Image 1 (cartoon, rainbow, N blue to C red):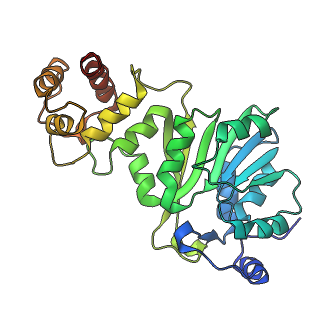
Image 2: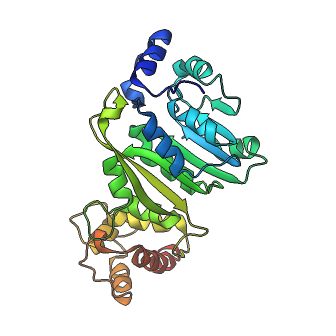
Length: 294
């Protein structure tokens, strides 16, 4: 058994050996607690039949745990300086492939089809770089990758927004987008003391289990998300005002928007944060017919 990478002593040794310094712009905070990494791996429910995608492997602390539990690991790393370190730290594992690409620009579907040809069960498990957490999750979901689920560590406040319920101040278009595609749960809160360097915020691990099909039926996904984003554009404004000012032709269509809200029994003076995903679905479906037939 190899010594875990994720201890303060071993992490320092590796960084010194390779003369590595942290880049703030890449949101690099490395985990130095093997127990937390074991827990994250367990929440992924990985088996020797699982293909695991990791984003931002750093020096390989989580990667080695994933390698021990999965059939194959694909790790996307944007920082070229980490490639030789990963080659060194992950040398004991022959089932890891490091891909030097920005996950946000990569054609993930193509890479997955190529690398996971014979693999049915695919999971994303990662300690995400905090400055791009949301775009990464949204990309993984909207590209309809063949995933069973996603287990990621991110800022606790983003985790709170992802799992938020209507009527709370954390609830927003992100909560709805995630709920549309997945069942979300926060499985663990992680203190900032287990990172090197220490971030300024606490973290949380969320588990997203993908729905077989989205939980509401919408005529047009893009338009549905446009309506939810518009509804939260200015949180103090009513749903009617937000939709009127944010939707294309909204100002010209104010009467039609008002009538639609009334027909759906949605009080036009309500705020976006009080609407459930079901209400947003029926609202976007009704507006879609009106706005697109212009």
